[in-house]
Figure 1 (tube, rainbow, N blue to C red):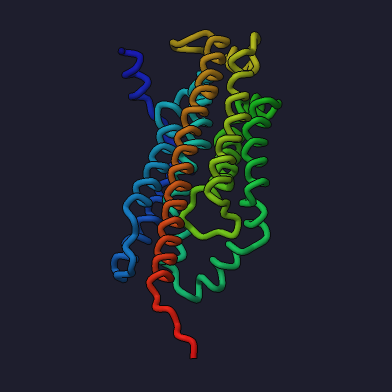
Figure 2: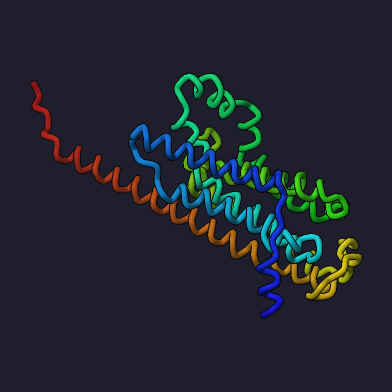
Length: 291
């Protein structure tokens, strides 16, 4: 129990990451206040706000909280960061609809000159294409864990903090944007294909965790050189981290798949209701008399 309290009470702070997250929260709150002052309709959904700030809070916790304080000592803490950033925080940020909020709060001229051209650019269309973003997400996940990059990032803290985490967050935002974002986008998939894409993503996620868990040697020698105040030995730590990704990714992805299937069923129900209303309307129209 004392060790748990020690871990939970250990926090760190990086000015660049900390002030960046604070700036994101401040910009979102400013936009919400602007919408409220203007009295624009419809009102901004509270679930969007809850999702966005939940994503920011989780990002803060795993980067600057206890997880971030021990990510250079324990492999399981590092894997918790990756799992949270890529599979929980990023989709929550997307569900917060910051792009839609920007479109609603900005002036017509600013939208026409700056926001809309960026959203319709070839770069954004390419990065958020469902096939490209799936391969990017899987490529970043597998490539960073099964290449010398991971060890290099551990040995060079700026790469770990600013490059590796940016890769994870950027790839995840690009992947989840056409699947979960409430913002209209040219690459939006039908509901059924969203569930298929999310289901297929379990393969690289779970297999990465399994191969790390099943390794009989220390894949990342850096963890064998650091002093551990407590906790498992390096190899046991690696196996625990692999199991965490293996099981955790399947659990988290199952939640997103269930949400996608739920939205799919709701869309089918709305379509069926619309067809029934149109059929009823045609049936009740008076027949035209021949002249």
